[in-house]
Amino acid sequence: MKKFIFLFCLGFCFFVGLKSQNFNIEYSDVLNDNPYKIKVDFTGNKIIKKEDIKVQYAEKDLDFEFQSHDVNASKGRVFCILVETTGFTHAGPIKNFKNAIPQLLDLLNPEDKVALCSFSEATPDKGTSLKILSKEFVEDKTIIKNLTNKLVTKIDTNAQADIYKSIYEALDWMNEQKDLPEQKYLIVFTAGINQSLSTIRREDCENKSTSLNIPIYSVVHKTWTAYSGDNFKLLSDNTKGRFKFVDKPQTITEFLSAALNLEVEKSVLSYKYQIIFQPEKVQSGMNTFDLIIQDEIVKGEFIIEKKMDTQFETILFIAAGIGVLLIGIGFFMKSKKEEVNQPAKPLSTPISYSNIPQTPPKSEIKQPNLANTIVNTPPIAEVQKTAIASSNIPTLKIVSVNGTQIHRIEKLPLTIGRESYNDVVIQDNSVSKKHAELYFDNGFFYLLDLDSTNGLVVNGQKIAKVQLKENEKVYLGNATLELYLA
Image (cartoon, rainbow, N blue to C red; front, side, top):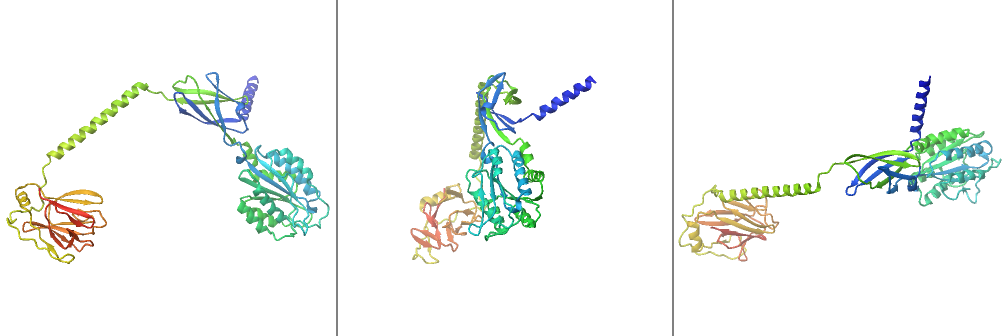
């Protein structure tokens, strides 16, 4: 028996301990070392301030930075309660509304803001009778509870009530209020009877509610007379709200609690906090600390990774850098040596210089801008001798907007142009796709225009074919071409 009582008490204490756990550490992290700074994120179901917290490490109280993320008006909710006070809600309905409002307020979170409004008989002059009782949204729920005493009705049920216009104006008033959270709700307590004196209809209220993102929750009280409950069901359904027929305060509270998810939000650890503290004499591995929040102790921990000696790290880093540098220099020298020792590639189509005449013919220069103009320029004696005696491969030097390129003449003929299928590619828009062709004939190099847009230009003359002379520039659009025999 004693053993049973002991286990029961132990279980009860454990249950109470769990139930009283109001705060929970979500995440802790080491921000930096030397000195170490620890960041801790934790949540709670209470609003706290810095003076409510102590941070203890190694049995010493530490200074810390404190920040609250969610405890502010922008993270709460807004509830506007609109109550019908016409003859249709006289007696039973208004009594039930007034009893349900305090029960509803007790379900809200401390940071939620509430306003109380009412509407009664409308007149042809005004068309509505909206009254804003609280004048503004408040967090003090006691103010709203006291204002419910001002919700009074008359026995007369012949008066007209403009429900839709009252709802429309209540939505506008909510939107005009400054510095409110984004999450807003309009709760309408009504008998559901509308004798409109204005042009405002249910559809207008739906459009206004949707545009402002304020859902409408309709609580329609069953009365002895007819009511238009279907219209209010549509009003709530089309604005992402909820609708309910009621006949007693408990039904109202249960409906709104479930529809607005009030009890769930109240029980969730919804307030987020963060602290940053600097411990002394930390050790490698796991470290523990205590958060003492309003006499509740929450255990936390952080890990300090073991670091190598700083001087050793520096020496190791420098050695690794020198090693990488030496390897890079070795590869560079090896590639240079291979490039120097590499034999010259033979011409795929050998070029014979045996037929170069010792006495070249005279140059034939025709008038410029003629389609088939040919300029024959004999190679000078030095060029002839170099061409005959040299074993080097002739090259073309091409200068364009993209720089200078040197092309070894290893085969003939060669096509020159802008497209990649050419043997020599010049990436310049002034050069045609297939601009010219280089070939060797009777001891001379010739360059032939292939019907290009800008042609071949030598000494200011546009020609169709030119006999190349060493070091003489030939223009292909904006690009220049020169021949080197040695």
